[in-house]
Length: 161
Image (cartoon, rainbow, N blue to C red):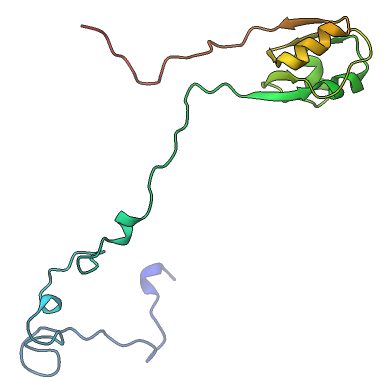
């Protein structure tokens, strides 16, 4: 059996009424559209609402803005770092302990307290985190980002002439 062999069961479907084919039988002359008027003439565009502002023009479109240069960090707080009990913290160690994803940028935030001195390496630090680490006798080292902070916009090849 093939797709073109399939037919509906006998008597289950009727042929549609073809209107506008002369005066014999039903559906001749005005073809069931009545006489005159906009509805009798095939001139109403899809979505037309009688002059009222159509729905597709009323609904909001394209709101907001997505910054193509946004740099997104994974936040790691001081209490999570203190919970590891290590003397030196790097982004690779945070990935091993499940506090950050493999290729994610890490930003250390200042929630929590440190008991001892820790050397912390990360891509970014909040001011409170940096102050807390140095106050506890530790040191802060910023790791360079794996890309330029503001990459060139895609497809822009403007030259000043």
